[in-house]
Image 1 (cartoon, rainbow, N blue to C red):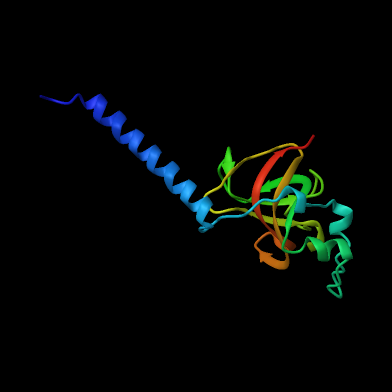
Image 2: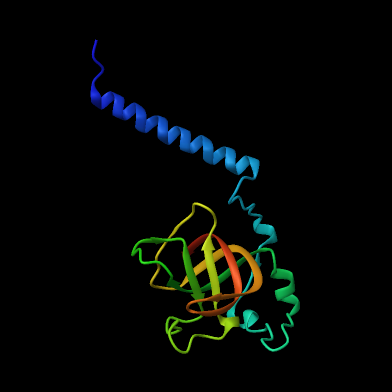
Length: 161
C-alpha cells in the first residue's frame, strides 16, 4: 500500500511543530538559554527623565536607576532598527523621540537603550511609539551607531497606549 505524499508531508510538519513546541516548553520550564522569568509585580517603570539621571561624568545613579539595574523594566520610546529586515527584528535602539537619529550627532548615551530580544525572539518593526519590556543592565555599549548607557534583553514590545 502506498502512502500519499500529502499525508507524509503533513505528518512531518506536525511532528516538527510538535517537537518545536515541546522543546520550547522544556526550555521555559528548565530555565534554559534565553529564559527570562517575568514577574510583573517586580517590574520597574522608567521614563526618559529617569534615564537622564545617570550622570555621564561620574557614573552616579539615581535611587530609581539603582533599583532598576538587573531587573525587568518597562520603558516607552521609539524604535531605531539595527537590522535590514522590514517586518521583524531582534536588535534595535530605543530612543526618546522619533527625531532622535543615530547619525551625527547621536543622542547622549543616557538617552539611548541598546536592545537585543531574548534568545529566539523577534518583534515587529514599529514606526510609532512603543512600550519595551525587558531585563535592563546599566552598562556602556559601544556600537557603530554611538554609545548607549543601557542594555536591555527584550522580552516584548507593544504599541504605546
